[in-house]
Amino acid sequence: MSAAFPPALVPGQPLRSLLPESTWVRLAESLLERHGLPSADVAMFSTGSDVVLGSRAHVVKVSNPNWRAQMVSEREWNQHLRGRLPLRIAEPLAWGEIDQWPYLITERIEGPSLAEVWPTLDRSTRLRLAADLGTMMAQLHAVEPPDGHAARWPAFVAKRHALMDERLAAQGADERWRSEIQQFVQRTARPERPLVCLHTELLGHHVLLESRDRLRPTALIDLADAEVGHPDYDVAALVEFVFMGEAGCLDACLGAYGWSEAERGAAGSQRLAAWALLHRFSNLPRMLEAVGSPAPTNLDALVERLFRW
Image (tube, rainbow, N blue to C red; front, side, top):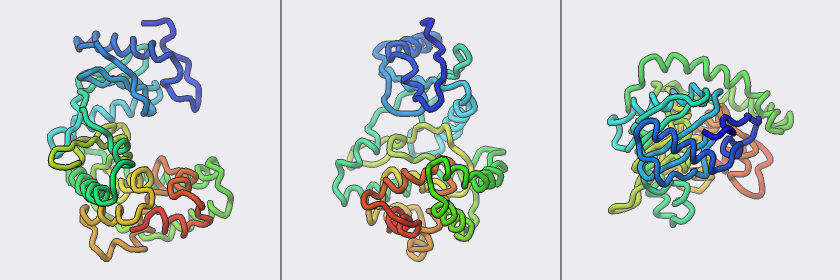
């Protein structure tokens, strides 16, 4: 392996930018060869917080040593969900460490991502696909959670509450926004539900599609941050990164998921917004950007526009 590896970590800098692409490719080739897997045609993917590379049949993910637990989590979640869903979940094939950097090798699942396809779709296709996403989410939530995970949820939520003001301040939110958000989250009813398997990051890049008779979800990838928790928590990423306030999408999605018509109204929007603001990766400026110009000037306007039915 090149003397350039391992790279020096730089806070806030994407891992893939720490070394030339050719060095990462050579590393992935060496890891595939270590495990007796074909190493031809390796190329780097352009997305992901980890360094992700792919050959024709395999995906190699290399991560920051500080994120070792997430790499273990991804492998364990892939193993837990495979065969329990009518969706493809990549099979973990090999894992280990190189100079203390954890890596994971899985099979490669082909297909365009939701993020690639969504902007090209007409409205009727988007609404049909939004309903498919609701069905997909319901299927995931119906899988029996792995033993021991549910016990972590109360402490996780308590930590999100405790860190809220600090996180908002770091994002540049002024005192008015911070106070408004904290009061909103505290007073908004979030009915208790049985805890379920959560992907937690249902971004467009993590849902792969197929087109046989029509376009539909076929695979889920990147389970590093999967958890067991409240089912509403999984809606935040779809709303912010896929639907982005487009009328009808959330209604189609949660109607297919199983929400009653009565639930799909203002109180439901507030309930989902509260979970989105508690989300581990919540970001107020990003949420404001998602609904476009003019930016909402208060929380009620943001909730109405981003979580519209």
